[in-house]
Amino acid sequence: MKTGIELIADERKRQVEVEGWSQEHDNQHDPMEFIRAAKAYLMIDEDFIARDCMWPWTGGFFKPKDDIKDLVRAGALIAAAIDVLQNKQ
Image (cartoon, rainbow, N blue to C red; front, side):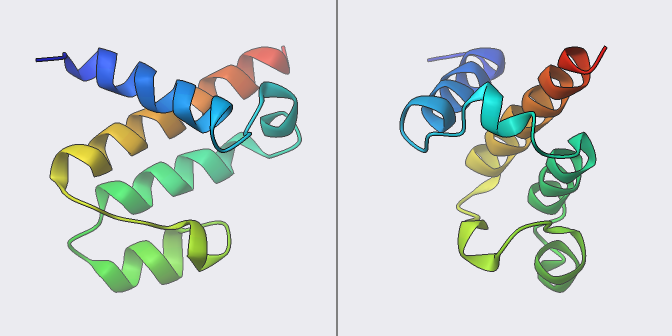
């Protein structure tokens, strides 16, 4: 069984390799967008808040699944925000 950090790293890699969300693409966004997206996945039990108030992009990209997958996605989005912040320094 993979650890949480391994699952998050795998998801971040998938986002880059499968979805095409490269570092260059991510650097074009405000890091707060990634943080808001992560919060949306963390607030999934309050669907209205997550989808309509927190999610920074079009609704089609918001795909909650289950507790573990949602936490993994949130972690990967936080990692993306950290990378963008580091690249702006």
